[in-house]
Image 1 (cartoon, one colour):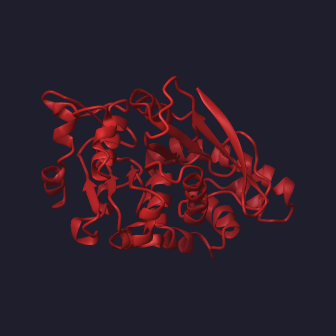
Image 2: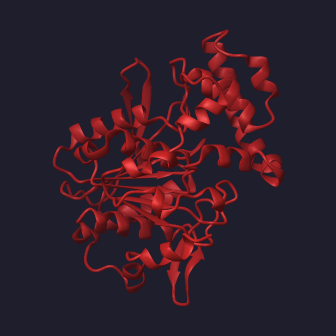
Image 3: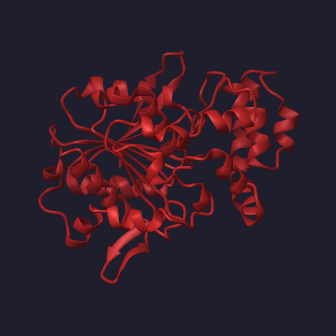
Length: 327
């Protein structure tokens, strides 16, 4: 169960934060912050799964909603985008001010994962003042490759159309707030994510067009700038994030751990079971990610004892990474 808190943003808009309410109330326990994906929310299946894991551990947990994703349309002439690191910085700063001593662990899923990585890149060694460790799950770190994948073949007819259905509706609501802000007729005719981002997302957030947006907002080129414990978890069979576009170990610094199992799809991922450590099961992924975050941040005691044998194995992902870097 969530309790909503509305914050006034620096530009006079609002952002809704959903905080998990649990029977346990340990003020010294870590806070897990989840940044959702494209058109996601605290109601997304992965958010619910992370909330369940946080509740099991007695941790604080919250989901800050990107603009327009909480159910109420935001009031500023903007929305959200894959490189929204300024928004993430403001949110993490506010959370840190609320709990100066509490450890904070942040996870971003899909679009939220790329934006979280961009934040970590921008702040470099200073990022550890706000969070202890971060994880990006199924993040489209190469936005050009991901955008083209979503707009191609089966994905275009199913997933691109699904995303556009809600995104165009929100764009129409934004145009009613600010008539003439963008080319509404063009947005209504958009049949691909590229077309929508070129006509709406890019101009509303200061980019020259979709090429400029997808290039400048992508996290992949600057992964070596990250200077706090960071997990980048991508399945190589993700239909939205082509395996060939994933970063290699030579493209990241010592703070970044790449885990790239062959299977897991988009935000599916592992449930560790005997004989099949990477079996697709969304309910197993949050436990593994939380274990990694806590261990990497030196907070393993926060897990309430030793991790499971399978979890301990997954906390040592170097062999798996090496197996997946060659292709």
